[in-house]
Length: 291
Image (cartoon, rainbow, N blue to C red; front, side, top):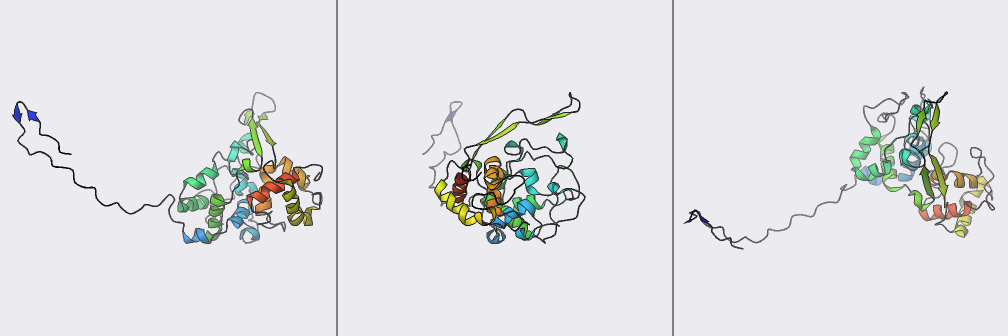
């Protein structure tokens, strides 16, 4: 559209008027959606083995050496799950009431406030790789709450496995169970003698409600009964039967079904599909069939 010349102090503007707007230029090349093309190392990585690394990265199940590092710090100071929780949500969900250094437990680090699952999708592939390696951070021998330097402990392949696990293999809690965190954020009440840890209450409900119990019974029979028995009582799991583990610690049980329990003979990949995990939970939630 042509813009008319305007008078200035009663006189016509001496400069020439603007001409018509020209046609639009050609469109540029299509851009790439974040985070861009996946590196070949990421494509080749195994997210299921990465889940095993999240639990115990030094085991052969996690593509590690098979030898736990000899350190003066307890393993919780260099296990990913100890700070970030099985669900990756840190201290906002299932680990909201887990004690650490600042809450009178010197053998554990504090649970991270980082939502690792959100971070995993918000960062580029390379940035997430660098975040896991964390060059220049504390050595795993140091018992403090900061992220450890894993650059000399994990192979690049293990790190890429972890990256793929975090981006692709986590299961949203509400697909398997409901969780409620009520009460105050954890703190130490020093007004009492001895000091008392005040913690919120974590409650699980609707375990397996989205699954099919009949299908789940078949999954348990085919994938679990060989070791745990037909009713899930064949192995003592920290004082719990298989059914009790699912009902009392649903935040952890799915992880071990999918990624194994490294170093115990229960390897990764036992039950992988989310729908199968839902069905398995539906079956094991039945305390009559699985006491």
